[in-house]
Image 1 (cartoon, rainbow, N blue to C red):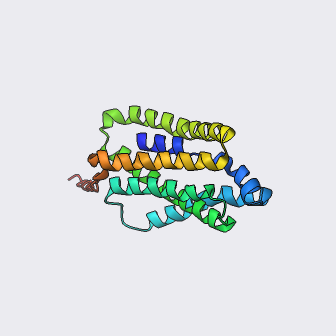
Image 2: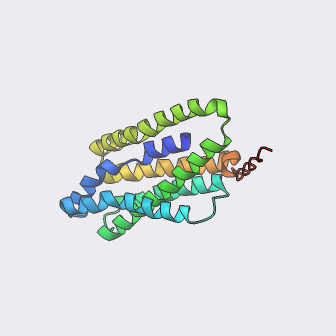
Image 3: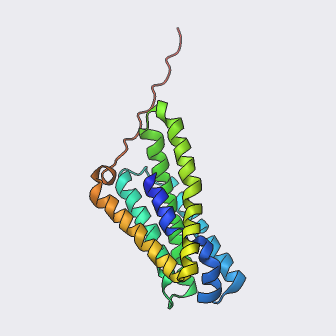
Length: 192
């Protein structure tokens, strides 16, 4: 949950897309529509892919890889020479990798948490789920106000990548997390 919270805090900058649509890509409202829809389209494609394949086995590595991919795919927006359609494609990749991260976190939380702690953990998760992205957008906007939208996206992404790298290097328990497939419950025996 901390990985997700910090990732959305540092890398959250979707509310800066109007600035990129207008000032970087010069595409106006129609371009903004494409940019805003791209992460959702990537998430839908990722969800379709995940639901059609066997369950993920290496949850920790997948989570860290998805966070890094999501962050890395958002960073080229800070480049001035990026084409509009490449930007749309990269935002779709960020949406797809964010969906993978969400699935892995949900499976981990529902599978490895003891039953008596699950409600409390879900409450904490909702707190992070709601506050992380909103605080991230506030941070990105405030930094963009004193620097620029490009600097805000770049520094937020670098902070998120540093966080993902730090977790990868210093918490081998997360990196090596694997969740066993639950055993099916035995069929009830008919009463005689």
